[in-house]
Amino acid sequence: MESSSFIYALFSQYGIFTIVAPFLLVFSLLYGSLRKIGLFGRDNPSKEKLYAIISIVIAFYYLYSISDVIFTSYFISFFFFEILIIFFILMIIALMAGISEPYGGDDEFQKYKQSSHNVIVGLLTLTVLFAFLYASSVDFEGFGTAAQNIMTEIMVALIFSGLLPYLIIGGFVLAALYWVYKKDEPPKKKRKKKYFFIAPAEALYELPEFTKSRK
Amino acid sequence: MTDLNQLSSQIGFVQGNFNQLLSQYGIINFVLPFLLIFSLVFMLLELSNLLKASPDDTVGRKLSALFSLGFALLSIYNQDLIIWLLSFIPKATLVIIGFSLLAIALAFTNKKIPGGLRAFFAFLVVGIILWLAMNSLSISGSSSSSLPLISLLLQILDYLMQSGMLALLVVFGLVFLVIMWVVGGDKKSGSSGGSASSK
Image (cartoon, rainbow over all chains, first blue to last red; front, side, top):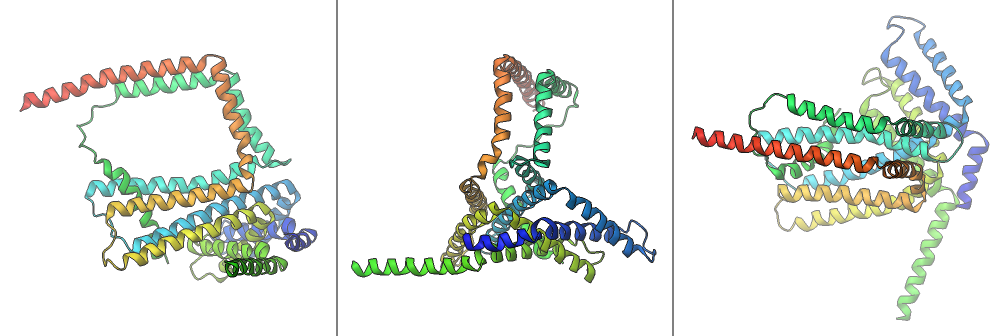
């Protein structure tokens, strides 16, 4: 690790990690987003220059707060690790899809598969939350501590103001009222329990197919 | 026996030299993670067209490259990531090799894996990879980073137990469950009775 620390120290010394990299990240993101959404109209002749100026100014404001830059570093590094995990899972799943045959279910199975797909999409969005939690939990002075304090303060306020038990009991009462007053539904068909197992797996197998078919 | 020992010591020596050589020029700790992060992020940006105004937008493509460059450099700034990658990738590659061997072995049978077993394999893959990822996170000691959250949860639990609120909530929940069970049971028997009478 010592020889690698040389490159790391060199880059740190010249501000590659704390100035150049975050600037590139924020500038390209803002400039690209502004170009894409076309906030100042499509026919404005000086729009590109305006986008560039706005992006540069905001990027420099961002660089002014070093704690936010370090927070971003933790945030995106953990996010990348999660992306890598998903990448490996999809790679093996795609490999397995080639040597297995898909489960041919009925319409009910397709509904289960669609629901499973939605759940997987929801879980994928949680990766950002996990990365945020990791970055917030890392011990340093700055945004992480502030974010951590916000979560702690909310929970502590809920506990010590006595709101938490009321919220839980209120939830029970609302659930009971909904249950009492809900309309009678026609009797449901008997659910096939094996679909709960097979449908999420089939939804997983479909993910690499979706990415493959995208242009 | 001595030949085997000599061979293993030779392998260890060569491996050590190779790793040292890779580390010496920052290949393992800088170049490889940079290339991996850059290429994956760039690929994902190209896939999502996030920074492109149109699919053939060359400026958007350059911006994606710049974003990936910044992303890769800023990620490497967190040295924990390098340790996670060094721990996770070799083992995950081993899993890929294992499943590839399975595919090769199945080539003899000229049959494909049926639906149920295919689902089992999917969950197996997800389980193994997540387990490896958790292991590599705990090796670098970053699992201790979740301590504030755990301590917060413990604090809440402690408060609920000390104040007697937990017992109250449990009793309340149990009463609610019993009521639901009793009333739900009547409804079921009523519906079955209805169907019986209709017959």
